[in-house]
Each structure stands twice: as C-alpha cells, then as structure tokens.
Image (cartoon, rainbow, N blue to C red):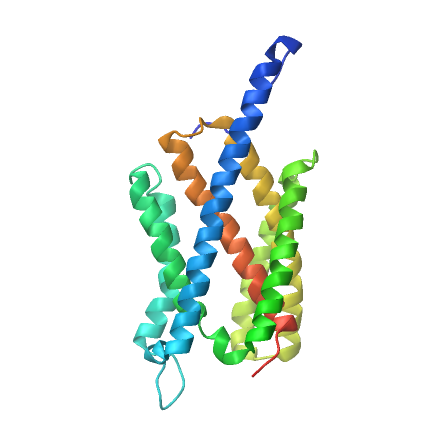
Length: 245
C-alpha cells in the first residue's frame, strides 16, 4: 500500500497546491466523521429498540440469565465485521463496505442494548454527553497539533493489549477494584487514541484523492476506527460514572 504521508511543499510557488491539499484533507475528515456519527446513531437507535421492545431477551437464557447461542453470536459478530472490512479493503466495492459498516453498527447496538438494563437512562445520557465532549476536544487536538503522535500511538497500542489481557483475567477474578482500575486506565488509553487516530487520518487524507474509490474505502475504515474509540471510551466512563438501576 502506498504511503499516506502529506506531500512536501518545497517553495512558495506551490502555495495553491498546499491550499488545495488542505481542502482535500478537510473533505476527507468530514466524510470520516459523517460516517462515524451515522454509525453511532444507528447503534444508539438499535440498542434502545432492543432494550425497550424486550427483544434483548432473545439473547439470554431466561432461567439462568446467561447469554445463549444468539447472545454469543451477536457479541462476537462485530469482530467478524471488522475483519471482513479490513481484509476486504482492496477486494470489496465501496458499496459493500458501506453496507458492512451499517450492519456492523446495528449489530453493535444489539450487543450494547444491555446497558439500558444495568444503568439509568439519565446516567447513560450524561455519560454520552461527557464522552462526546471529550471526543470532540481530543479530535481537535489530534487534528491541529504539530506534534508527531506516532510514538505515543505505539505506546497506547501496547497499553491497550495489556488492558485486554487484564480484562480477560478479571473475568475469572471478578475483582471490583481491578474493574475500577481497568476502566480508569481504559479512559486514558482511548482518550489518547482519539487524538492519535485523528492525526493518522489527517495524513491519510492528504495522500489520497478525495472522491476516489480508495478515499471512500479508507473513510469507512477511518470511521470504524474512531467509532470504536468513541464506544470504548463511553463504556469505560459508564462503568465509572453510570448509576445502576
């Protein structure tokens, strides 16, 4: 795959090219955020419908309260969608990626519908607002900063791997203190990843032609990346600040 580093400007005669490149980046980023917001709206609407309609009961065993086969399928399906979108980037038409992203967002809503059973709607709304404000601030930081966040991104990814391992271990330990620490660290990691991913997408936008098939496909993958940053930040904040029913 080609490098997506921004083009270098060598002299003043290329100022118009620089302006054109910035416009191109702005359009690409706007497309990415449009898809991300659309995905969040689909997820929110689906989650609320499944909880309010009682459809969430289809994913749980009524006697034991544990997830049934459908519940596990819904929980694991988002990972399958992500793998298909990533490995199918060069093979699938952009329309197929659009449909996959919409389906991914809907299935994520189904898998997250449980939060309406655990937390009050007012606390869900307030945590969503906090997440949105945090996301907006860090996205602006990532887009405007002149600091190269690449090295921080590498550290954040290593920390994320450690967080995943700790989360798996705590499934068996069931430690409330460990859960609190995991949630607090998760907030820090995904707050940083928002800035890092935004800067990375800014560089990608400078290296592709806006409106091309390649740009459209990369916008979908970029939207998926930021969407996951948002959802994970929201869930970690909800565990810290959410009020239980």
